[in-house]
Length: 496
Image 1 (cartoon, rainbow, N blue to C red):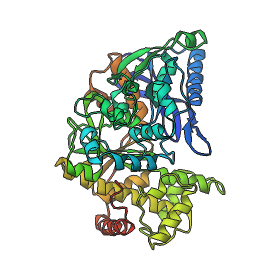
Image 2 (image 1 turned 45 degrees about the vertical axis):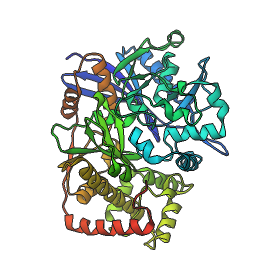
Image 3 (image 1 turned 60 degrees about the vertical axis):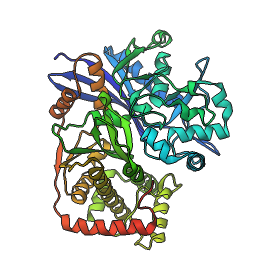
Image 4 (image 1 turned 120 degrees about the vertical axis):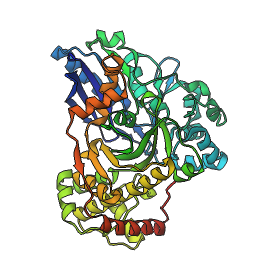
């Protein structure tokens, strides 16, 4: 297999990465060319993504590629889900895309669900209820700024918006569209009536492509401006879908945790699971590569630790490795948190929010970063256990292996805690699963790979996968019982 070069732009809520991938001798090799923070613009009332800044970062990478004389086969872009921008008839972006953490969305979701049945919406879409889902963002926009919707010709999700700036082509892919709560998981088509009943024009909904479709080439004006004449592939635009495509699994009876700012815990299925139990447990049915269903639950992940570190770093710069070492030495099970508690969604100061939570629930207040880090990681692992139990109940499966992928797979302490809390074998890696999936889907579009099975074989052959086995099951079972009791007392046992 001769070398081919592909460029993955993997944009996350915390940072973006430009990863160069080459595929040769049945292995993928990655090189990080550029990493940059994801930039938010905060006004008095709202929180926005600076899409032009993201576009400029992509341009700079492509300029670097041209200067180096490297010939790319293609590029692909993936991002987080739900957020979108609006394009008018002239091809201009109306305003800036809202960030899903904008404080107006929870209120809009409550207003929507007072007017429309949540249960009927779930039966149609099979999507987990999060206060920032696209449908609720549109509802908020219709209430607060309907002029934008009147002027808009099309809505595009974040990867589609960047693809549009590169190519001038307006389209989405199935994986990112499925995060919106506007799509049928059965037909894989839009449900325009969901927009129309809110008074939002359904022509805003873009054309849906399958992941792995060639979208087009860079616009002539960009090539004339000095960028390489490269092909753009519509990969699995939702970063989790690209990551799940790169899970190095080879047998049945496994689930995945895509671990990062969010922890997405799920299983790959041929068909959606939509019933009263999945609705009550707040599980989602999103689309994956090859028309699979990613049946999962979205749990707040390392966001709590990221935000605590941000506060601590004002006094002392602490790395995640240092925090993990400090947590390993701290006393176990001093504080149990629900990572999905409403006060952790977007507090001004996460350390203060956790301190207030501990005080409110009558628990010990962590006195130093190591203790608070340990409480966060223990609570995450125990929350994973609860979600796993629901997954086994809803699918009738008994999972033997948990694959942890993404940036969180580097956190050996959290991986070990996950093995302890669940009693399962944990296999961690690859760290850059999203970029790997992005690149290998491009390779499928180029005809170098045939299907998901071959893609996953390449992943297994290319990366070290670390094992974590449970050692103290009885101790963690006792902790689980207390964790459940604490969540019940806090009134957050079911954050749906």
